[in-house]
Length: 310
Image 1 (spheres, rainbow, N blue to C red):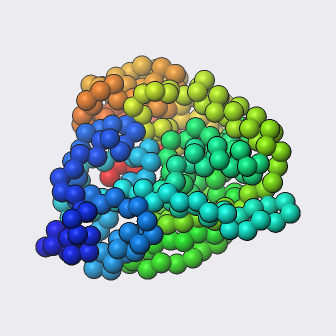
Image 2: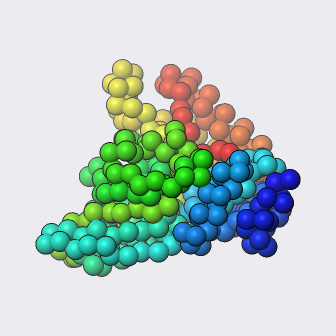
């Protein structure tokens, strides 16, 4: 039934029983029942038609912050490769650019820095897409800077297949959070309002952020990024902890380098889990539970996942 509906709307572009490990930064091997690669706004409107017919979907952007565990046979997986960028308006001290959700965030950072457009420079080195960065409200802490800070408006696709335009306030951005995590809406396009600044200053900020990431985080390995959310300031103060960092808690729980099967806690940054090759989901789940248990025992903290496990 579902396959017939998918082929009626998507034709022969819907792929059956496809390994999506090449599209996930953790490289966990898993086959999904149906896969559709979105390359344009019209493709997204086709997905909207499917939503109206009751088809459930799951979106893969840059493939970071994501683990696919056991794919539901009734779900269409959508690989977002809709990557367009357009200058909409230029003012004396500001520009407005429209960027589609499949655009790689690091590529966008490099291009805007080169133009002397400020607001995204601290996010150079992020592995995901614009849609994912908005969904998670990706951040940089030195100084504190969120992707959501420069969102002006956006076009969303609702779970019912309707397209709507919203402003920045709609997202209710906060730490690692946007309202999309509750509504299930999908970012199609985003308008960023960026400030005109000295390109050399922007480049210096971007390079400092990028180099800090390279110095403190594992690069060139199979990882999904930070695995657990940092704790709140309120909890930090209540428990008299020196930091909100989940990586610090995991490290002090003695788990750096700890391994289950092919999954290992990074020696460089304890909030990164690395797939050393051919990792099984069951081993990853065991490692997650061990981390949660050890941190709970030592610090009385219940760690929450930052990575989405579907």
